Amino acid sequence: MLVLGSAEDIDPVVWSAWMEGLRAHRGASLWLPFVHGHASDNLRDHARHWGIPARRLVFADPAGPAMDLSALFPLADLALDTILVSSPPHRTAAALSHALPVLTLPGDCPARRAAAGLARAAGAEAWTTVRDSFEYEEVLVKLLASPGHLAAARSAISGALG
Image 1 (cartoon, rainbow, N blue to C red):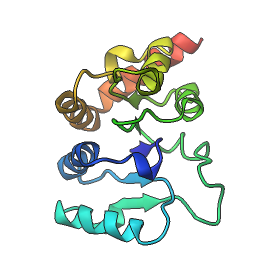
Image 2: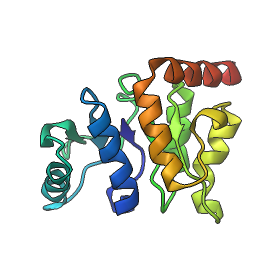
Image 3: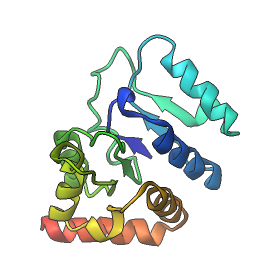
């Protein structure tokens, strides 16, 4: 699972969903953006609180490009949008251009609907756009449990992109 948003956009609701995804699927890892100071230690501590080994959280290299995720797109199975603030549109578009499904929850303002609009344009809306935080968690766990669903979402994106 690859987080497209910034560390500042991680809230307790989305963190809970991500931890449930990791708890349900022991082989999954969560790739996160670089965070400053003690934030990575705090996130690892929060993961341990959920029973998730800290090694399953992978942070971007602080010496590398801050958020150049392009090398990770082929390695990830699923990209994750944050809930309070939509991920930057250029990251979402880049993930979708690699046929990487993006799980998103559109909000009530344009800044919170960007990822959902891009997912719709890429043909992945039915697979990855949810209505509330409960469905976000449910769909996340379902997608991780079913390589077939992820493959179908990738196929829909590839077909829409031609």
